[in-house]
Image 1 (cartoon, rainbow, N blue to C red):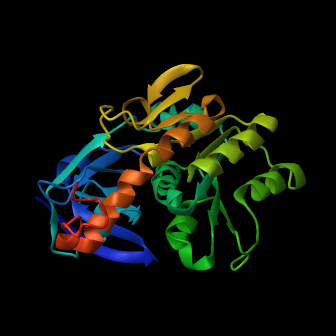
Image 2: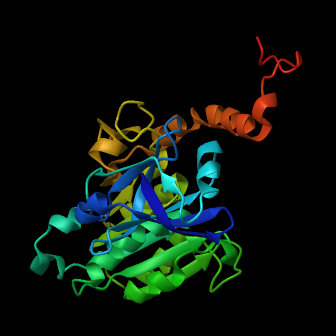
Image 3: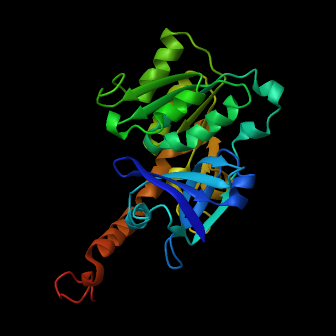
Length: 296
């Protein structure tokens, strides 16, 4: 069992948990993920690592409630425990294997959308701890849904925040900020790392391709099983079949077929909707009312 040491709600339906997982904390790297299960029969949920403390033996995860399983997870409190907390899985961010001297010559731009701020944070922190400050753009629908602002500000070279509705700092999409930095402020970047909703990453890549700015994306939003067995995260990258959970989750964003990936993502929504109904209706779900057809 893996004890939850801290459990808080960062924003509406977005939760942070600090979990005692010494073996994971000892070897994980930015970009990797874990698979959690609340109990023996629970669904396997892949979550990108948000932070880790090797000395304390803890790993921090951040998740949004999008279905029945994550809703049950959100009900857990400090003192409760996960049945499984498996990892680290996936490939670490590429820069963790680069020569430090060469890495310091590069200028990084990170783009985080919504809950994508969580996996961006450990990457920016890792660079900051090695004397490399990166610029970071964080986009959120509203001010109330913005997460990890102070944590990100403490490790970013420059932090730029934008909200869809203009409720905080500035109004607009993350792509508007990228264009402003590159075209108006004449900033030059060697690498862009974009993590967030699939549609956001798609449009970031369309823009950065025009700007001739190499871009890395994380396809963790399409992972389901986390082992390559279910096929949910099957994606075409540069004309080749890849699986986000075992080959990634990070890939060359300009080579990803986002349209195909998002189409596959839609295939799993109906099943998740059924799981939500089952959770809400409990024993009465498909209980033989004779009207819904669920008993046939």
